[in-house]
Image 1 (spheres, rainbow, N blue to C red):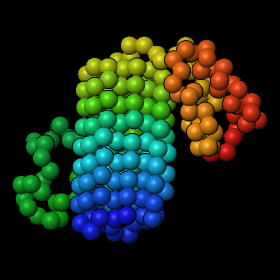
Image 2 (cartoon, rainbow, N blue to C red):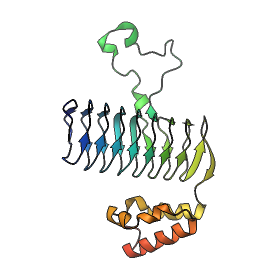
Image 3 (cartoon, rainbow, N blue to C red):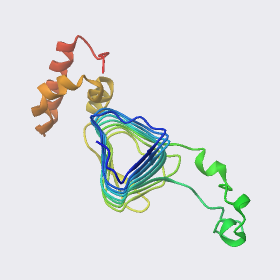
Image 4 (cartoon, rainbow, N blue to C red):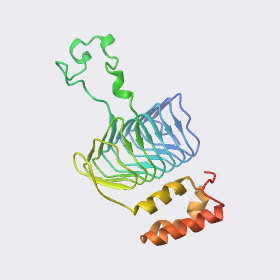
Length: 238
């Protein structure tokens, strides 16, 4: 479904996808059952199956994995984001820097009005890609500076500013964000990263949906081991 008020240019939109009102989708590819909220702009991006993009998002050169969702008013540029991530509203990922050593911070085009000056003057601003792992939660108002890596399973608290890489399964808060603790013990983190549950077949995850209600670390590990055993090992097909 593509709303009449939306514009799709040189993009692949399957019949199961939904593009709501007043969207622009350009040079992009959407997976099955994706949805793009009202007023969103998606350029040069790839959205995997089941991705949900919130209202008034702006995406440029973004790759987003299975069933990740974003809240409203997010800005994501030059980033790869894993599967099953929860990205809240007003999140900024990968914005360009300004050259602070120059006289003016505004692009020259704003002064000269010369179309030749409209080209992005600092291509290095986009050369470093943000890399967000799978099962990551970015709370509302988070800002992730360009070129950083946030490991699998991380939690970043509301209104935090991420200025350096964050290790897997860490919980970070503040401006600049600092790690305050980890979600699980180091042995469990190593095990989960070996198992990589987000790469299990979707049917397996649905059959074991109650796994994601567990809060006891030992029970979580035990259930994961049982699932892996049934699958015949950790190298399972997606």
